Amino acid sequence: MMKKLLLSLCLCVALSLLAGCGQTPTPPPATATPESPTATPVPPTATPVPPTNTPLPPTATSTSVPPTATPTPVPPTATSTPVPPTATATPVPATTTNTPVPATPTPAGPTATPKPSGNPAGVLLYSNANLDADRWELWQYTFASGENKMLKEWRTEVAFSRDYKLLVYFGWPEVMKDKPGIYVSGPDLSNERLVILGGAYPSFSPDGGRLSAQGGGKVYILNADGGGLRALSEGEYPAWSPTDNWIAHRACFGGSCGVWLTFADSGERTRVSSGGSDGQPAWSPDGKQLAYISKEDGNFEVYRVNRDGTGAVRLTNESHSDGLPVWSPDGKWIAFRSDRSGTWAIYVMRPDGSDLRKIVDAPVLAVWFFEKMAWRP
Image (cartoon, rainbow, N blue to C red):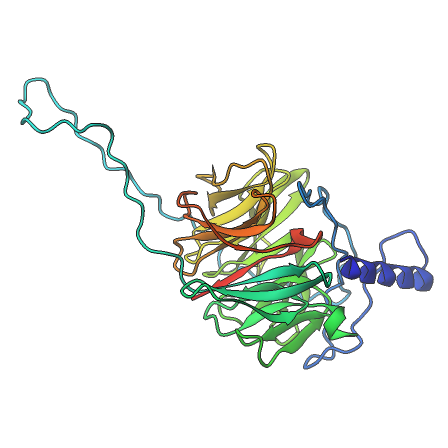
């Protein structure tokens, strides 16, 4: 269960022997990075082990040393956060007392808003804990048929490219041996290739040419072939917008914690939420909203907010942990993990929190907090 953490601790001990203890060591250079021998790998991250019932994310941002070769950021192509249009309510005209009202049947009570029709569709990829073998497995659930099957062992933290033709994920040392890191493959895990050693929590840029990743408490950007690595910002849980070059992530700047957006080409940033426990941001397919988690109301719940920080609303309300939200490709559903029934499972709901449905049981390991799911048509 703790193998990834132990691997990071071993790396820390090795660095201490070489450079001495005291300050945070500079991450070691990659020894074998395919297709990009000169690229500096994202430093391996020690995954925290929060309690499984009410896990707490880190409350302070790491100050690990960035790579020594950091290219100058490209000037921004956009200087402000686009504000999604907000729906304007149609005013109801007032009825005057002099105007006769036609006689109509009086309804028995308020008319219920009809629920959207339809069911979730597509394929959901998720990390499933094989508790007997003490390992992560990548599983695939097909909504149309209800088929649920394992794909491969020790591939986690998955994300699809915008066209759903590629999958990026973390490959663990249990199967990747001396080459754990970020891998890219086909949507069925075919033709997997190592992008860069180390790193975590990868996601694609809209055009698929770049990746965001986490390492040592920082958000990094690199090319999809492993080159061009550079540190972008302090932060965790990076998620690249599907429509532009803003990256959502959790961070604390000057004591101001929450979900932030940082522009990939300049480092410009804007704050979206203000909760100290906010994290795991997930974009809606149109790039106008974010789902995220927060425990500002007592325990971890799933929230939704407009990308400009307005309209925040809590979607779940349970005494257990809800987390790892992901949007359906059509934007009509949000899937998330929860232990509300006493065991961990995957649920779906509408973006307003209605029409809640349990999909499948899905156990987790203690390091579930840095996992995520991916949904394709």
